Length: 535
Image 1: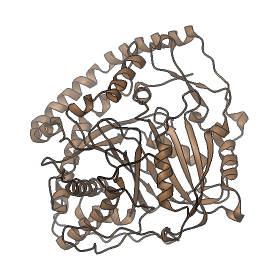
Image 2 (image 1 turned 30 degrees about the vertical axis):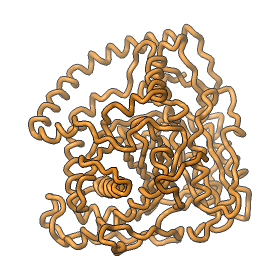
Image 3 (image 1 turned 60 degrees about the horizontal axis):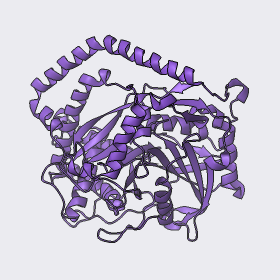
Image 4 (image 1 turned 45 degrees about the vertical axis):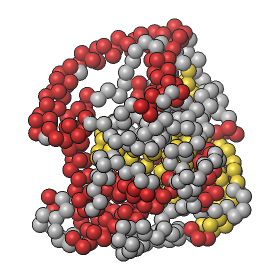
């Protein structure tokens, strides 16, 4: 028996039909060797290794009378026919069809009477324009956020996949104890009361740290009152900050990781600063196109991992900060400076309180009370009327720096598919994979039907920012590089890549970007004003 933390359980309580709380990945794979059936190969490999992943054989059990968070218990059995599904794309099997099927699958909640994960092996993928030969396939993975966060998801994929074409042998099952659990009512209630008492003890122990954190916040406020006031101000209302519906829209794009790192070095900023800046530029252009750009800058929620290096626990270990995206600034270099300063101020504020941010909470009836609040958001327009603390979520998850394989098939692209919620109808998550930054954008289809436009703008804004930085030459972008020359872009690793295309630039000056990037699967999207349909 394993009790969920308050943070883990919150993802359960927030889930409604309109807000599924699972995190997913979309992996594009080369054809299997010797023409083998990828579904059977993957099903066999996952079945052999499922016992190595705790979240794959745990299911939820509520506490009696719902007085406390649920617990994880080992399931009696795992129905692989439910957990590992098969799907095929009809001809021609291009990436637009793949994107449509992902939108539909991501709208479906997981069955809470089973372990909260599912894989879909999607065959029939073939798109010569994108460099995907006949026999290519996709793997769509889905796990509930109550069981894993981004870091834990990467650890799970490390177990399921291989670092070489030849699969490794699974660990012996007799070395991993998996017994079905059926804790009784008194055991569950006793555990809950014990946790209530322990929480009071932990609160007392944290009093010195909390006093220290208050002093740190006061010092930060005195040093930079302007930044603190910006943090406390609500974000401007946009189409992203509404009560959302069940249908999802999905977009994907890709950038060169070495080129992005080189641009950050050239400008004396960080990779995250560059990412936030080009996302801000993309959102600015998108809202301008809809004639909805607010005067105030949009604000992003930026998750921050608390996971220690090497920690592969299947729990959520994350907090967050906010960062202004400079959408009120047209000049890309000035926007980068603003984002750099905003991010530095937010990191300073987070550093003052990070050690006392609770990852757990307990109070009587939490499952009922918090779930009722989530249902109220789903059934009323309260979110539409309330101020918005943030406009969009932008998350960066470090991924593998070398290719991985599934049942002998090389993974050529690995895109995240995350969560949007009431009040935050757009989520931009990126994940590094080998020498690429893979962007996955998930949105409420009613609020943002043309999300692929934003994905395309991200690539174009990168080139616009790079061109502006190149023109700047040796002049400083950020204060810390006043005397430094721009760094040379890192060389791309040799090896075969998936041939892809990028949309023509829509820069304000009408010129195409100076450089061209290979980008991941993209598809035509329905323009604003068209009536969206569910998939």
